[in-house]
Amino acid sequence: MTVNELKEKVLNGSTITKEEALFLINEDIEEVACAADEIRKKYNGNSFDMCAIMSVKGGRCSENCKFCAQSSCSSAEIPEYKVRDTDYVVTDAKKRNKTGITHYCQVSSGRKVNAKELSQICENVKGIVSETNLIPCVSLGLLTKEDLEELKKAGVKRVHNNIETSPKYFGKLCTTHTTDEKIKVMKLVHEAGLELCSGGIFGVGESWEDRIEMAFALREVNPESVPINMLKPIKGTPMESYPYLSENELRRIIAVFKFILPKSEIRFAAGRDIIEDAGISFFKSGSNATISGDMLTVKGVSLEKDLENIRSLGYEIAQ
Image 1 (spheres, one colour):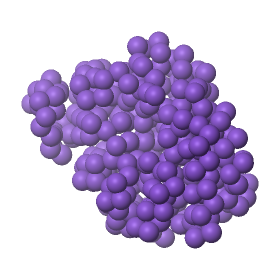
Image 2: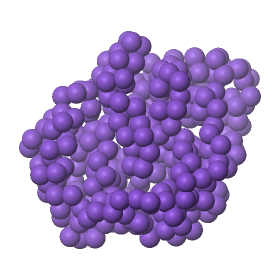
Image 3: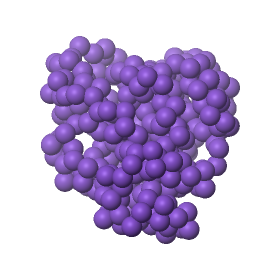
Image 4: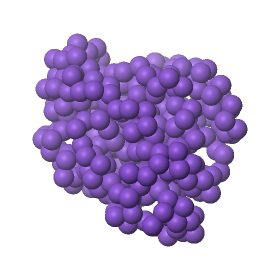
């Protein structure tokens, strides 16, 4: 077994096994990254997708995810506000319009938005559709079939719901909901005719086996977009003292995920601002998408810097 043999297997339309994926974690990082980039070129071409997120509702959450500043188990100071109105959201969306941003995602804290909140978010979506060229996305928790149908009718095209980690390890991160509950929502997203965005967080104590298991669980639900987030420890959370992952470990995660999920956009998200080149090496390792600007509770990389870096690599910004 060699990296090149596994690359050719994926390029020819076959899938790799868990054993083969685990083989990649000990091979030369440059060889693995280069092979992943060839897979990216085969299945995604030179198109690069950038999205922006809007925290549409903020505050302490009922869920106890140990990595999140808004979690019920966090003592971090966070702003609290009810669902933003349409003028607020559309004004922000207009600033991002025709700048290179393709997808615009409204994100809410909490297990799930209620009916009144969902109605307001749908009105916001309609405003985004009528006033911009952006593709509306949402990240609103454990949505129902009826919620998804309402969002689709308003104009939503993509729904985000991170699997976060392997089903086996998830209980170490959160006990107020389960992987099964998340996967149920993911399946409903595709059944509703919407695109799925689902990835996770790394550097939270998981093993390489957990990472591989996570990728294979994602392969079962076939997300169009897979966000890769590195833990950025936040004071007041149970994971405030966790160390950052190394750049090469992150590159390997992205590359291995590209081998397992060759057709998905691998979206390098949180953690780029602490990388010296802001992600350039990752965009040559299988990733062809990112979140530009700040994340929910951590800093990101500016749009101007992203556009400069991405174009220097020969990518075409998706329209």
